[in-house]
Image 1 (cartoon, helix red, strand yellow):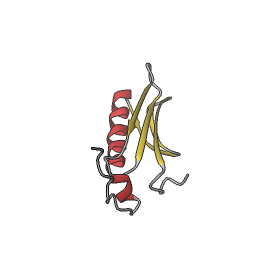
Image 2 (spheres, rainbow, N blue to C red):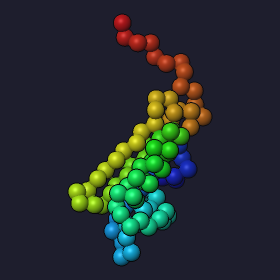
Image 3 (cartoon, rainbow, N blue to C red):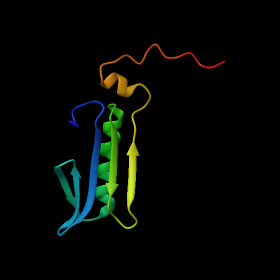
Image 4 (cartoon, rainbow, N blue to C red):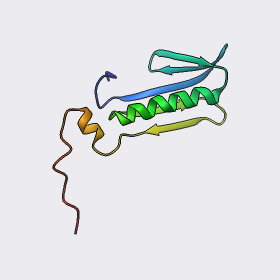
Length: 94
C-alpha cells in the first residue's frame, strides 16, 4: 500500500549495521546511531508524530530482547487525515 494513503501503516525498522544501529522508514534510511536506544528513541518520536497526524506507525527494533512499539492515532485523527468528518458520533449506550 502507498505510504501516502491515510490508511497505510508506517513501518520503522531498527537493526544492527556494520557501523552502528540503522533506522529505516520503509525503504528509506533515516540514520545511523551509535546506540540502539538512540535509534529507538528517534523512531518512536517519528512514529508518535505519524500517529498524531492520523497514521498507524510501528517501530520494530531488532535488539535483544526484540522490541515492538505501536502508535495509533487519537480518536478521530484518522478520519480527519482521510478528509472525513468524525461526526456525528454514535450515541452512547444507555
